[in-house]
Every structure is written in structure tokens, then in C-alpha cells.
Image 1: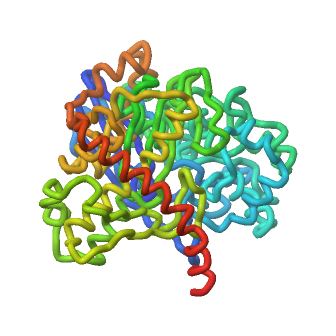
Image 2 (image 1 turned 60 degrees about the vertical axis):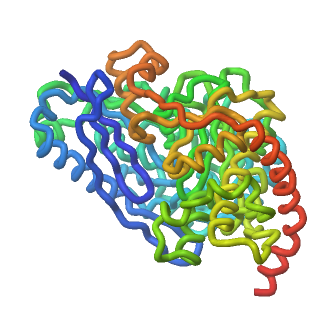
Length: 498
């Protein structure tokens, strides 16, 4: 018997997933930590909170799993992308991390775009957006020059946790791709970008594959928990990359629709990288020498929770959605666009806002609820469309994870709107499973990630397209695509006037 541990460092909590060689979950442990909101648009976190959470997870596992210290052989990570961690020459944290969700950097994004022009997308495969790491570095240079003067090391959250556990600094390619500092195809830091913005190469960590070993657990942890054998530490991957691993997204004809607070439509890309011109995110995958593309809906599950809390606070989600299957596709002429906090894909527009179009006296609460689900799914289809139109993809299977996988009517809606077979995971463990898979391959349990996925990932068939509904949704989706250009100017003027 041996165990690996996947540590998923999220925005609100660190989750630990302990598995054995058969892919069975032995125990789940988690520890929460706070966010720091200094003012509107600012989102920060103290990296010390991550290390405290890690100790709590270790403590829980040591207490609840009697042979944890005897059989743990490997640890790897999944982590929130983009968030900036800076250390001084003594490798001490200089300030709270500026998180991916922080949007103070619009000015810096404009500067990056102006300075680099077309070369930004050619090198990084992505546009400059507020969430990425480089704009945060520029903000620090401009607004906290005294702090920047002390910076000697730049890390991302999971890599700081790895450094704390091993004493070595590394960053895997999937997370590095989200910094806007990586030449995605050459898999090396871009000297052009670093020189343009006066960032010394020495500040950046050594690049490594996701399943590459970065060290072993430091002696103080071995002594505290009494580990009986060396515990190998592996680099890990970005949360979306690890989430894709945990969902088995390892072939070009399989997609993933993930609906949490935000929504993601993700696709595997092999070595032949499509030219999406920055209209989709494109990052290195945790599977060596491959990539993944993804589009983002900023308010996916958030749109549904907002609707419930505003108009049906006393109902459960199950109660709210009861009966939507009795309403025909298209919610009898009611359209919803989920732009309630702006949008990312295919419209990187912070000023667009959501709409209900076609409200009629016949529409009930259930009509509105169905329209919300349809609008969220249409928004994800926008990303699917880009992949099919630009890269010529044809998805045989789409794996639905998160909130969208918890309601059978919504699963059928996804099958009809995406026009693809929808599968769900038998057991959904999220990015933590992907992290554990990287450790499992790293310690030699499997020759590669596809072999690991055959054991660790399993599916159930959830829904297949209804041909009649597919046709109806194609017509409704065509109308949905007209809403953004028709309301863009109106929304911008409303924001200016209010």
C-alpha cells in the first residue's frame, strides 16, 4: 500500500486528496483562508495563510489516516492561476499576493498591448487581461516601487507552497503560460517581454514539466509527521490543466464544460497549436508537449445563484428548476445573456451587462429559470464554436463537471445545445485529482498520464442530443448571438450615466 497526495490551492481553501495506487480516495481534507479586499476591484491573500492551511491538512490526514506517515510517497499540486507572489533576497514574502480575480490593472494591460503589439499573441498566445501576472508586476513597479526594489523572486501560489515544502523554486509550463511571460511554443521565458518591462530573468523560477520532481519533503516536516520514507514532491499544474486531467481530457475530440461561479469550455490540443489569435486562452497542458484551449464565461453559475437569490430566495435550486423540462427549448421566446459582471469569451468586455429579451406576460418563474440555464450554456457554446470554426474540431464527447452536472434537465440541455454526447464523472474530484495523478505518474505507478487516467478516471453517460431540440436550439442560439452587438452601446452608456 502506498499513497499520493494532491493539494489543490484554490482561492478560498486548500484541499487535500489522498489516493492509493488503485485511484481510490482514502481521505479528503481541507482548510479555508480569508481574502483581503482593500477596495473595490482589489483581491489579495497572505501566502502565510496557505502554509497554515497546508499544516492543517497534514494534521487532519495524520489524525484520520493511521498509516498516512508510513505510506505517503508523493505530493503534487494544483493551483489558482496568475496570482503574483513576490519574495526578497532572503526568500521572504514582501506583500500579500495579488490574486487572479484582482482587476486593478486595466491601465497596465493597455500598456502591454501598446508596447508589444502583435508579438504578444505570437509569443504568449493570449491577450493582456487584468487577471494575468504580467500586468500585476507592472502595477507593482508603478505603484509600489519601494517593494519592487526588494523583489528577487517571482512565484505563483502553488509554487510558493512547493518552495515552502522543499526549499526549491520551480514553475511548471501550464502555470507559467498564464503569466504572459512565457514563450508558449518554445517553452522558455521570453527575453523580449522581460527586457521590455525590465524584469530580470533571475527573478523567475526554473521551468519544469508538471510531473517533474522538484525535490523531497524538508527534514522538519519529515520529523514532525514521522514519514517513514522520502516523500517526493512534483511540480503540479494550473487549476484548469489539473481539472482537465482529473476529467480525462486527453484527446482532441473530447471537450469539458465546467460550470462553477464562472464557466469554462476547454479542449485538448496536441502539438499542432491552432492560431486562435487570442480569442481563446491557449496554455501549455500538464501532459508534456501538449496544450489546451479554453473560453471563459465570467458569470456562469453566478448568474443562476444571482437569479435565485434575487427572485426565488426561499426556494432550493432543485425547487427552482423543477418543471423546466416541461417548457419547450427557447423558454417560449425568452432569452437571457449572462453578462451580469461583464464577459470574457468571445467578448472581452468589462462594460457589457446581462439582459432578458422577449419578456411576455405568459412567462413564469420557471421560464426565467430555464432561460438563465440556456443563456449560460449558449455562452459556453460561443467558445465551442470558436474551436470548431478555427481549429476544425468536432467533439464526440463533452464531459460536464461542476454545477452543470448536477441537474439532469440541464445535462440534456447541454447535449442539445452543444450537439454532442454529454458524460459526467462517476466521482468528481476536480483539480485535486489531476494533482494526485501527476504525483502518481511521478512516483512511477504509471508510465504516463493517459495510463493513469484509465485507472483514476471513470464516466457515466449522462445525455445524448435530441435531434428535434438541436434544431430548435440552433435557431435560438442564432438570436442569442445578436444580443451582444445590439446591447453593447446601451450598456456602456448606462454605466456612464449611473
